[in-house]
Length: 149
Image (cartoon, rainbow, N blue to C red; front, side):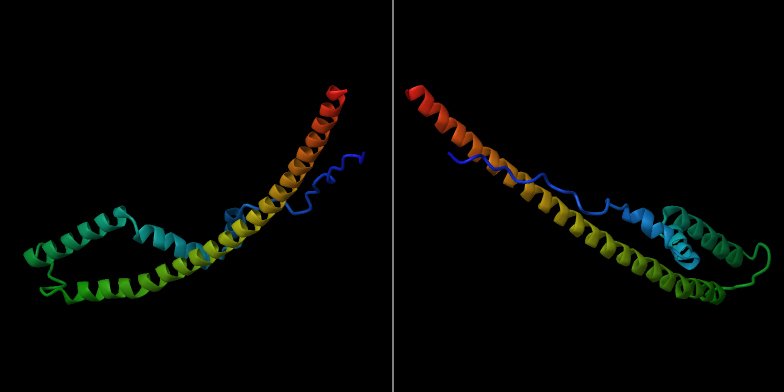
């Protein structure tokens, strides 16, 4: 009778899993942090409400001439200010989105590597279970022979 063979224990030979968010945050430059802050601020309800209130005050003050009409109707100066704001805000938001896309690519790659490690370990577990099944089958056959005598 052949002796029962089990596979060698699985060796975990891979680096520990990294938290991609922490690694990415550590590598951010000042301009990247600033673009993220601008994108967070401009993309909030608080910003929209404050800007709406300020624009409403601008219009009311200039229409009613409460103080001094520095920007009479059709509010050319206000349009200029809003155009400048949009001209600078859009590229800054795009920088933040590009950085986020790069982060997402790194995170997806890290997930892929973790999935490869998990697949390797699952294969090792399945090999070990198959060896146990063969051993149990051999033991079962031996028991049948012993009980038949």
